[in-house]
Image 1 (cartoon, rainbow, N blue to C red):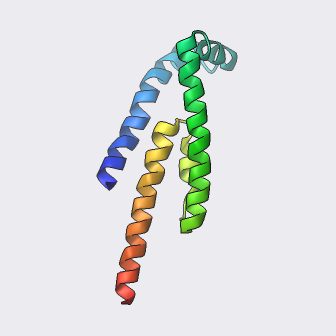
Image 2 (cartoon, rainbow, N blue to C red; image 1 turned 180 degrees about the vertical axis):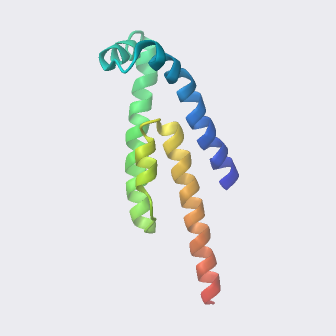
Length: 111
């Protein structure tokens, strides 16, 4: 699963940025224009509202699950929400898999 999550991290970074970077190069960091374009059509408003709700769900999941498992560096996926949930969620799931594997190895060493 770790390799799968790593591949999703790469796709979750490359795909959104491949659309945003050219827009940014053309328009600069024009936040009002970005928001205008984000809600320009019903389809774009649908997509952005979906991303927003998904981002909130990912943030809550990361905070709660990282505390429950006492994971380190749980702030990293939260920072990666700047790229989007498409990076933040697979990154957190990758970190979680690695953390759980470490806990399992540590428990096996104590037996």
